Amino acid sequence: MALAALEADAAPAAIPRVRYRQLGGASAGLGTLAAVLAATGSWIPSLWGDEATSVMSATRPLVSLLGMLTRVDAVHGLYYTVLHGWIEVFGSSPFSVRLPSAIGVGICAAAVVWPCGRVVGLRTAVLAGVFAAVLPRLTYAGEEARSYAFDAALAAILCAIVVEIMLRRPTGKGWWIAYGAVLAVGTYSYLYLGLMALPAGVAMWTDPAMRVMRRRWLRATLAGLACATPLYVLAVLQRHQIAYLEKADAVTPASVFVQTWFSDGMFAAVAWTLIAVAGLAFAADALRAGGRGRFRDASVVHLEPLLLAWLILPMGVLIAVNVLIADFTSRYGTFAAPAAALLMALGVRRIARATRSHTGGLLAAVVLTAVVVIAAAPVWASQRTPYAKNGSDWNEIADVISGDARPGDGIVFDAAARPSRQPRLAMDTEPAAFRSTRDLLLRKPYVRAAYWWDETYSIPQAAAHGRFIGVARIWLVEYTDSRTPDSWGLTSLTRLGYHPQRRIDEHRSRIWLLTRSRLPSAG
Image 1 (cartoon, helix red, strand yellow):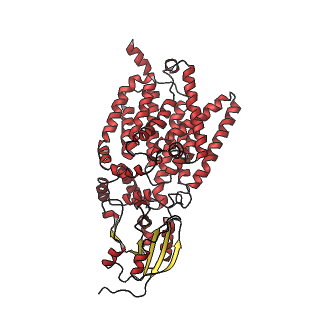
Image 2 (cartoon, one colour; image 1 turned 90 degrees about the vertical axis):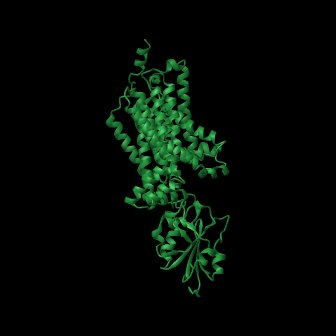
Image 3 (tube, rainbow, N blue to C red; image 1 turned 120 degrees about the vertical axis):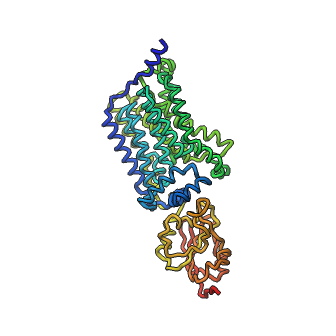
């Protein structure tokens, strides 16, 4: 009798009659839309510190990269390795190194559409794909040379696999092998993606029809996480990398409820309203049905428990742990952004169905979708301005030097700014623009250094090594902002006999041209 009940629970669930070809076409179309939207204008902002880390790591020889990963940034090693191959083929321009992320967002949107179409229906799936395409956290991730877009894509694929398991109730191992493999790869892509096992577990434990699958989920989860054991060990050894988060008030209402997925207060208000509608309406349905036993028909799959757990649990764990160990900043929540898009679509569906008329429901869906897109538009545009990436103005620095420097000119970069903001990174990420200059302070290039950055001399040390001999013109590039005008190297160069001839103020940089008429000889 008990065996018969378990076998009945393992029978495939009823699903909407959506043709695979239609759903596949919608997934591909909306994935393409999301990728194009993310890639459009991605060449406009200058690269910034985190992206410089990606580019400089990926342009190392593989032997050098592997050596670096044993000391630092092992958690990004998979992404750097993939980006290394990409750069070998397509180069390292800002558009080129950001394009893989746009493709990642496209994959993410396609993976969002599929499970929604399988469980709810094609129209709601299309809404979810549109919301994923315009969600500010994803449009930002799609134009940044970091792994976050792929993290979101892998999380969405993992949940699509969980939904397929819930629908198919497979007796074989194939789907569970896929689940464990994606969990393992996702963890290597982004350490915290291992927390995606939690929403998958919630899906298994809140659906009585899944009780026969729970041991398989546990085995597949443990296998997937076990495969990532080397990464966990390296992450613990390299935990000093995120120690800077201890000095930042990272967990605030704004950072959690606005910046994590929505970037803008108006968009966040719209998004949270729709998410609340989806969650509260689902809870009300469960209560009206008299409890889980009657509400949970074995032939019906509900997305809400999985999606709410996906949105809340992984980030909740990070925020809770942050009290003891700094491990949170808003962009770390990118992998849960697809859940927000799906819940927003379910919220629109609930509101549309509440109108109790086809015309009214269609009108409500159109209006709400328009509100979401209109709220997202200014955020998308602001992400694609010249200084959108942490105020970085490296493109302007490169333009000045490539346009005005003469062969043999020396160049000196401010070394007082923190490593991620040093203007030297403009040359490291776009060396062709600085081809005519001599790097007077370089001690060891980053490709031969132990960590990310170049090793450099101070100006007096470089002078003691004879670096300024025969150099009549020097370009000095200093980091500055409106609050802290910088004159880091000016005094030292003046002592060497150089005099300012020209000053160019950029957004976060000040560029000096200095000359001297008497050149010391080598003797």
